[in-house]
Image 1 (cartoon, rainbow, N blue to C red):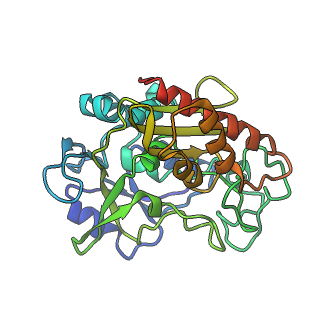
Image 2: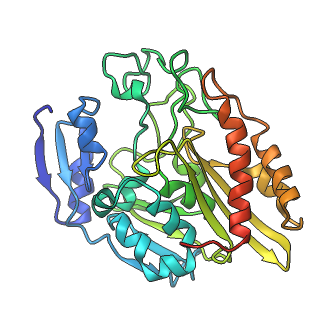
Length: 335
């Protein structure tokens, strides 16, 4: 690990101002991803600003604004606390399931909610500093494109990058239409719809989010919905624990009798960002909640997949996973 300066911020203003104008400085919260990357010499910050003392851990009902009646989750709250909070379990069990599917209990006790959103890919070529990687060093090439790409993208990839985004929590947040609130060095706040927070690789795979330099995630807002009784998070992986998803599906249904009035489906392990399966959602609205319709929706949702040499299996796996997640959601499976 390379030498770095360490600073501890005591308030939000000093934290964001401390990062402003310092392109090689990083916020330090749980550190469960950043410190690993520093040890592997992938990340090379010259300054870490510790933000763990900032008052951004509360989980509370939103009483004003466009998301009134929803839930606000502090950006520096721990994953464990978010997953086990009574309001999250009761109103957004999909989020609880997704968080508990990730990593291990020890890591969830350290990892923060905002930091979870900023996880970087686990592509082995990204971690191997001797290999070309446009995400790590723009312009050097993508080793995974013609390499061993079993774990890589089937949607939204470009010639510059085929890596996938690793977070489980974010897949549920995408399905729940979450909003990320951030603050900059001038004290200004803005709200970023979750669909716009993460980016596809395009020509700039090193730019993974729509955050501006120096912005700090202060909270994640969940709009009020009627998905609590019919939602499910399915994670398919090589090992039963401590493994990233080959395919994951966050599915949520709002029913009127046995008819679907709203549907939300998001996938992980398939793209550079949480992947909303919009064609499947649209097909389901107004339809009966039946396995036959789930299969039609899954086929529509996977129709645009572009698998690589070693991950063609993900198309059929994704198809089956969507159907199973929808069936579990219909049955009312909860954590």
